[in-house]
Length: 461
Ligand SMILES: Cc1cc2nc3c(=O)[nH]c(=O)nc-3n(C[C@H](O)[C@H](O)[C@H](O)COP(=O)(O)OP(=O)(O)OC[C@H]3O[C@@H](n4cnc5c(N)ncnc54)[C@H](O)[C@@H]3O)c2cc1C
Image (cartoon, rainbow, N blue to C red; front, side, top):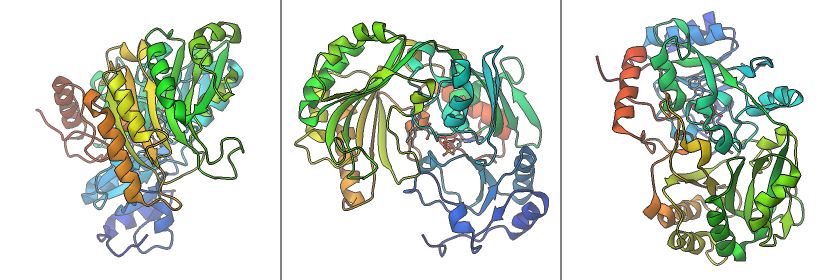
């Protein structure tokens, strides 16, 4: 990484931040700047004017005020999982909330309050002893706030819906310097916009989310030789049509790296993988999974599991990595699309992507209203990722991403904000929702101070 191309930071803003904040402030040229600007996705090379490591909610409020006074924008970031979708940060303060962790569980109301930088593993650790689960994502170190603002697709999703539906209140530091808690009754338009419209309407300092009782959970994965991908994914797509809402799964072409940390039987291997979670006991699970189990996997790792398994079962990387990705929702998965996908990612394809993934949607994910994105009707979500490490050049991965995306593009049906990892890639589902989001942006941040992924420009009166 070099610093030579940086625009000059606002030295006055940096001085004001250093004077007023408890947290650290980093500007280009500082010895700490390069480490401070790193995102979880190491393939993203972000160059903010200033980086702030917020140490408190007061630091967030002060950063917003100083940015406003000095004509800079503010880009909140918890982990940087979604960093690839941000616009240029040259005129922005990158406001890192990672230090602002903390979860408070209220077992009686089955809710948890999280601070801005809280990650899913912290919530799961706090709720598991109480037999309660949040609508966590597949990776333990994804931020609760960024995930939830963009939709939030969980392995409990088909039973309980998108994470946007489980939000009870959102604490926000607004561009005008005020702090509010948006709920269904207070600031309802802000509450509507933040749930699915992303983080453009203010800096979120905390969030209250619903928890769900889990009496029994079965989670895990089945692995098949990648040569059987056509048969396995075809059977899975058919099974998805009648599967109960208690189960949420994904089907993937996976190529495991030759990493010594990966167990011997799968290290360096290529497989068709079905994984997921079932809300119910092992006995009932046998009947639900039978059509897929009968295919005869080479490994069957489905087993009764603790709640924390929700963020382990998908085998997401447990630490920052570089990732190049593509995504689309799909209106269906017919034989021609599966054939095209097998041609692009199957055994004979030469594909070098780590994962080419189809997530099962439907159930409660397709139901709900009252938020910018309360439901998604597409029955499948497609996402693929390549890791530009080792001998395969990024150009090869980009070509493979283009190829797999072309394979599913005849059934493309929009995007989910959190999975749209490229700037400008996401389009809000309906024109009405897009206009309403632009109006909410105008109402709460007319000066366009907050720079978030896939945000609208303020518009309206
Ligand atoms: C390995 C991996 C696994 C994933 N698994 C899932 C999954 O199972 N389900 C799913 O739905 N998604 C999943 N995602 C996508 C993930 O939810 C998004 O990348 C999400 O944006 C990450 O949030 P973050 O806070 O960790 O990332 P960040 O990059 O820190 O934040 C993303 C964006 O959220 C907004 N934001 C964050 N904090 C604030 C704040 N305090 N105030 C206002 N706006 C804020 C900003 O616009 C920011 O740019 C996964 C991504 C990866 C890389």
